[in-house]
Length: 535
Image (cartoon, rainbow, N blue to C red; front, side):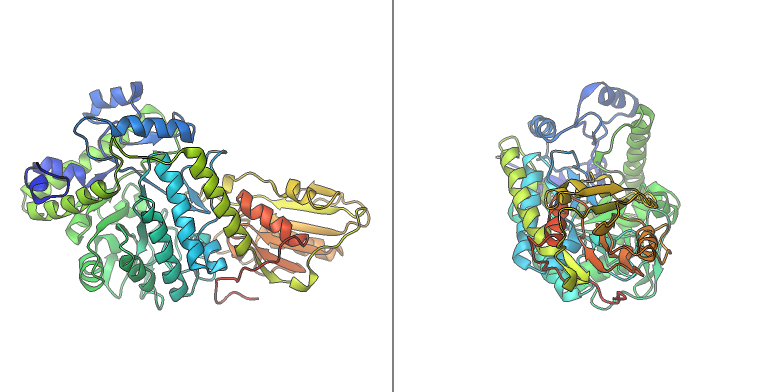
């Protein structure tokens, strides 16, 4: 009997089937329904995607993947998802516990906690049938933050990032979810958002490869190659660079797992190769095993024409790979090698008809316990520790001023996190008033003003955030001010606040930890995981 990933499994496949395996999402209809039926008729394939306008909760997603895993003679179900914690969480329904992100791990600097975090995330994902997580981020943090990285990066210390990355990978894969180290060979120091432009850097930051080496030693299932140019290796985007993908990742670092591309549907990524079809061919020629052309968990609310365009785009990419083999540009053996790696990952991590899954409520509760532990260990007092806790008479009001999010970073779901800080502060002090920036309607004798925000910089090159500008206004009026950064610590740069706090996350557990630190129920233990910050 032929088993998945065996030599017989790939040699028996036609070229079309090999190419089809290497393109994500698959052409398999996951959600069913009328839209998938229309796609099958018009495009000859399903979307391979799950729209969150149709699947609106974890339990519904669990039922969908259980049905899909029982399809006769199908590969074990392997659906990828971006569930990093912090800024990037595809499963961001209100009832889903959201984990603080990578930089919170760096602030806590606890390898055991990093492993517990990976395991808790994996428990949530496996419970709903998601068995391939496009995490962890192995990029080094930098000051100022790279636009697409920020709190997604653990630290600027390569050895700390390596240690925590290895723990996270062990935790994730120990619970049956494939991990992905990204964005090889490292985005640290990159100045452009790769969704908007290709960044070019002459050399990697010192130690940038250490986290990837640690992930490989922890037997990480896959590595994602980025779209940025690192000229010390080759003067082209990394995912099109044989010297980077094959020479560095395969040969020098010894990685033998699945290499996956950055999302090729991003215009800035595929434009450099002359379109998405040629981008896929170039990536495979460089040594990439899986080309990503779309997200497998969609935010939804997209018209049928967009889903149809995505299915046709996928079909074009598959056909381009087939044509490249027939034209002699890519060998069949090259496709067989990639397909074999991918089939082995399906067999190891995929969801089969008889797979056992942890109950969702149990997995989510476990994630909640770990999220609380991580948030409490990560909160960092950057300035003014001697002024804490706030000891105010009940008659003095605490003013909470939330500065709105600026801009619209595409790879960021946390910007929509609910604002629960005023209510949490109210659990520690009887008089808490919420005000907008610029407000002057404060009660006489107010005790302290807490200015907080997630990302309030007007633009990537801005030196002073809107939150820091609000602090300056309040200080000029004679108020005692605490500033809390719920996202990138860049928001604190240039601030005149008496107390500066970095929470590294806007999610509920981090908000609770901030409130406890402010009023003395918790001693802040986090250490700022960035070098070069002007404190």
